[in-house]
Length: 118
Image (cartoon, rainbow, N blue to C red; front, top):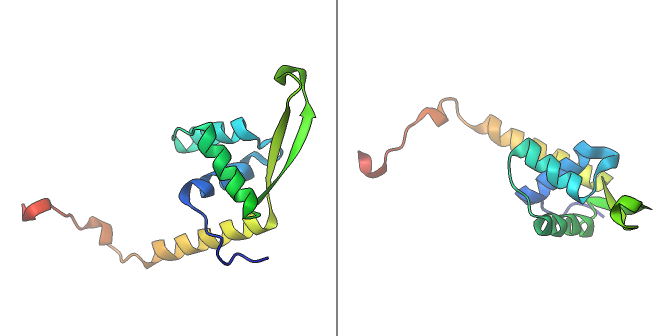
């Protein structure tokens, strides 16, 4: 299965990258904390779980349940890993962004815009 029709939104990209950063320690709250730490953006658990579910449906991540622990009242953590397809999607996205940055003419961002020609 290829990448056709499987686009990444900005938040999905952040979640996927955070899962990659965390490696074997990527579970809900750790992903939330990593995004908040590195991007300085508040993340709700509902939005995070929705994004993780979408990423799993797109086959960009896969998950497995960890062992039950007493500290979680016997509840198991769901751990996430970036799939090969997810890595490919991130690589393509990084290349596309780099191409866009490189296409910006020198000095383009130095032009100042003033409302109503003031």
